[in-house]
Length: 433
Image (cartoon, rainbow, N blue to C red; front, side):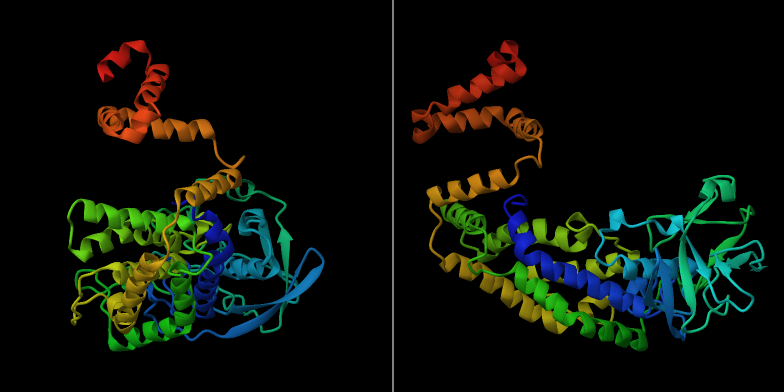
């Protein structure tokens, strides 16, 4: 199914998925994002909601890199690395993430600082440490002004030469790269917008949701609603672009239900959900980095997980009763779930009403998929995976081929035995037969 849906994902569903990813990322970065915890003011996920009251100042900086100057929007509460990441997003917006320079390979210089050029860093030896806590430097720490001129410079020295050891690093939750840790005191704890111990309530360490925070979640959800709806619509589309494999598979499941005398419609509904929406689409929604060459910060990952969970709930046949203890994501999409469930049911019904896909059309489609995948996959590895299945269920498969008239006419049982002999050797053939 994944191979057969690749072209549809590339030509149709991929666009709304990418737009949702970008919308979530841009929305989250409009407000403060904690560099250490990944919590953000604008979030769909209660677990990643920044509860501290931060009033950031929006600044537009003039950033020079490789001889070009661009304007970049940042917040005065951004750490230096966060600012560099936003600058790279602006400067390299049409460049795949894997081909961009690393933030750790670039230095940020304030060209028109109060006393001349100033090199900005997340942490310096002069950064104050109080009660065992050291705060990462923000743009406000350096008193960077709106409209300041900055330069992204390629670092001449490696992290190792600056730090003495690559072991003396910590990881940024917003990036896949390590950030420098200047002090050698193992007892020092770092923070940005909220200290770790203060980020949770004392009552069992659970973050309690309140009306004001739920309102903030709803506000973010309202901003992203269109992008979520567009993605769901693309995943549940039955127009001429829908791959025939879906109709072919769903008809097979309907026929199997009739063959085994299953009259409960929820059973077939669950089969179809498990074979396509939950097995393929949910995985893609949660992991757009499987499809695109992008960076997926923790806040984006947590928001996408909420969207994926909503899609999963839309495929469920059981009603979820809402109460005061219900998860916030259930409350957020309570009204939408009714509509989404109807969309899933209509999707299945529309496919059921379509003309059947002939074996000839199906074979043509699979031949096209095979040509599309030329050079992208190792055939021998694929055959080995298929054979591992055959090896596990060889007796059942051989027996089924023996009693099938069409298979007998093509001598498929004998041909499969020849494959087994070639793979395992003559000694194992007798055991299989």
